[in-house]
Each structure stands twice: as C-alpha cells, then as structure tokens.
Image (cartoon, rainbow, N blue to C red; front, top):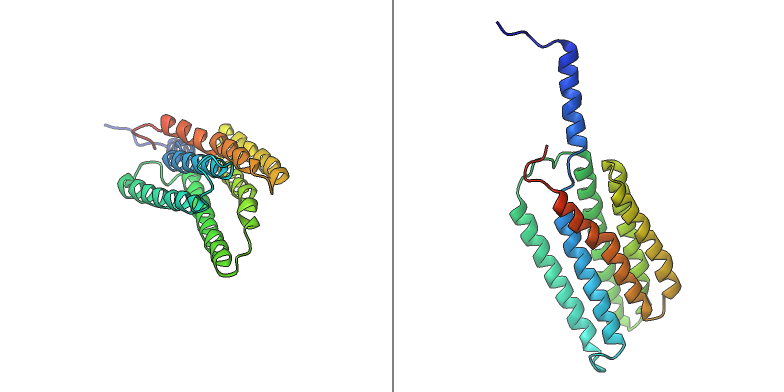
Length: 207
C-alpha cells in the first residue's frame, strides 16, 4: 500500500518546481552572440571605411549596413524558426529576456528607419548615426542588467555595467570616428561574449 503525500510534501514539491524554473538557464545566448558579433563587425567596418582603408567610396557605408541588416534579419529568422519549443522557456528570466530584446529591437528599427528617411529626404541628420552608438549600448546595458537581476546571473549584470561604461566612453567620443571602435569593443564584451557563455551553459534538457 502506497503512502499518500502529505500537504508539506506537496508544498515542497511545488516549491522545488518553482525554484528549478526560476533558475532555468537562459535560452537567448545564440541571439546575443549573433547580434553582438554583427554589431562589433559593423562598427569596426564603419571605422575602417571612415579611415579611408577602402578608398573614398561613400557608398561603402550603404553596402556595409545593408549587408548588416540582411545578415541580421536572415539569421534571426533562421534561428527563431529552427529553435522550436524548449524546456525552460516559461521561466521568468527567459520571458523577461524575450520581451526586453524584442522591444529594444522594435525601437531600434523605428529609430533607424526614421533617421535614414530624414537623411534621404533632407540631407540632414547624419549626427543621429553617431548618437545611435551610446543609445544602442544603453539598450544593451538595460537588457543585460535587468535579465541578470531577474535570473540571478551576476555575469549578465556585470555585462550591463560594462555596456553602461561603453555609453560613457562613446558619449565623449561623439563626433569623432573613434566612437565606432569604442562601440565595437563595448558590444563585443557586453553582448557577444555573454551570448557565447550562455550558449555553452545551455544544457540539452532544462526545466
């Protein structure tokens, strides 16, 4: 004859499930690694173009950023379509991470579409691209710090602080071409590296 579980055992079981869900590994590492790597490469490329490494071809900026958008959009689509349902997606950390980065992505899309429209229609507003660097890093910092606080991962909170340090550095460099190098370093350390670490920590079976 089997013994029926007591109320205390039931509550303990429910608590263990809740804690395991709360501590479930974050599943967005592949997205952070991809976007962090792309932004790092694009910022370095922008600096090299501005330094005349590829000659005086102003269209190089357009080609490079178009390639950035195409590769990023294609990569995002492929990763989302192939990811499918995964255990741990319902944890608080994963839900917060998804909402934060989706919202940040929509904001950046609206910002850059509006900025490019202004430049094309009026020939003004180029400074908006320079100011976008600290703004982008600020969004990275918010995303990493909040996700780290919710999930209890101190490394992500540190990555958020690193992104905020990049904001301070790039604000001082606004108007100079060195802003792209500083932005590249901050994006790599605050987004790409944590994304790779999250991918390595993601087990095949999570709660």
